[in-house]
Every structure is written in C-alpha cells, then in structure tokens.
Length: 309
Image 1 (cartoon, rainbow, N blue to C red):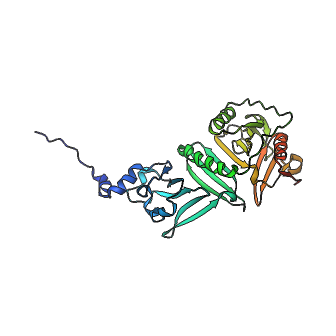
Image 2: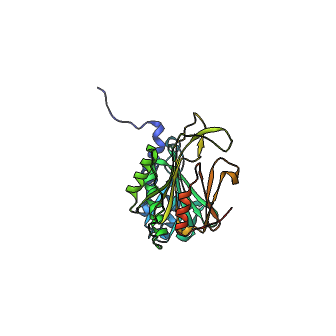
C-alpha cells in the first residue's frame, strides 16, 4: 500500500513560516501599480500615514524593481505610494525609518509627460521651479498612470476655458500608421476637440546632431483647446539599423506658459528647429526637423508671447 499526499517542499518553508498578511501581499506582488482601497492594502511601511490620505481620490502603490524570485514575504515590496487629492498630488517614499511626503499643488505644474520604451516606462511632472518628479514603472500599468495624468490635466485646465483657435491654411495629413493610431487613442481618451498642427513622418533620410545621416523618428503636435500635446519617439533622428521603440507624450497646458521661442537651424548650429516652451523657470524643449510654423501660430493665437532667443 502506498500513501499519496501533498508535501510542502523544503525550499518553500520560508513561505509557510511567514504571516498570512505577508503571504497575501507577496502573492499579489508583481510589476504592476496597484490601487489601495483600505488600510490593509497599504504597504506596512506606509501604514502609519494612511490616515493623512484617507480622503484621497486615488491611492496607488508602486512596486520595487525586483524579480519575483528575489523577493520574500515580509520584505518591503513597495517603494512609493502616490496619493491623488482634489488640489494636489503627493508622493510618499520611505527614508531613514520614516515616510517622506512631497506634495505638489496643481498650480506648480507646467507639463506632464509619459515615456514608454518597450516594457520600461516613466511618468514625469515638470515643475515651475525647473525641477521634475520622475516615477519609473512597468509599462503594464500605463492605463492606470494615464488615469492619474488625465485627472491632473482636467484640474489644471478647467479653470480657464480656451476657445477653439483657427489657424489659416492648416491642413495636416498623417501618413504614418503609428501616429494615426496614437491620435485615435487620444480621441477615445479625451472629450476635447483635437486639431493636428504639425506632422513629420518616420524614416526620412536626414542629418542628426552628429552631422551623420540617419532616419527621422517623426513627431506630431496637436492643439487640444486647453493644451498643446506633442507625440514623438524620443530622439528626432535614429541611426541606421537602430530602431526606436520609444513612445513619448507631452501635455503642456497653455495657461502654464509665459512665452515661447523657435530656434532655427541657422541659430543653433544644428540640422533641426528647437521649440522652447517657457513656464516660469521650467523650459520644455521639442525638436522638429521641419519648421513648425503652425505650432508657433497656435501658441500666438492662445496669447503666448514669442521672443527671439
């Protein structure tokens, strides 16, 4: 007679020796950003400040960057908590045995940006003082991050209602499938009218900053009534046989801008134009291989002052 039964492998003793609470957190751990719905969902290290953010519209916990095989129940599995309130966003991080909180009110933000490179992504808040707050995360959580970005954008733009501007002679035909798809995604994500202002296709032969020939990565600039949206692939020119997998979106509310300048190739010694958007001490720069005259005209129509660099 043989007795059949399940036995716990010796190498799994560390799992069963952990508390049920630690095992539950470990079981749920992954590369994704998770919502916090109660004090029990709050990572243990952050639990003491949960009461300070219990009224937040959204609480998110950002995991550490580690392979699952390298973590164990009871470890600090989350490196940051993000609390989105009505009037501010707060970033909570552990520091020397306590939790450090950095809160940013909406009027301190000049622009928002997301960057995705395959499975690696980042979320950036560009501040009036010239600094930025950058949060790295796995691209599997981009939908969750986009909800936070859209919430902030609504709070930043709802105070001032901008009219739909009309730029004479603007007729943009988007011939690239990637940029067509990105525009379609934005139209399903937003309720505002979107007007393409300037488009540059990918894979055109051109020169980069090193004066060597390469291929363009493309760019699309869009007027969204209250803000300028720019979609690009990171560097404007890529080397041959070096494909670009970057997707970058930059959202700049017109109400946050004080001035702009357009630097020509003759002025900057490069083979490209550089659009500089200024909000107090923060500058957002964007490279164009063709003159973005329609973008400049749109900024002027929204009352943004132009100046010669």
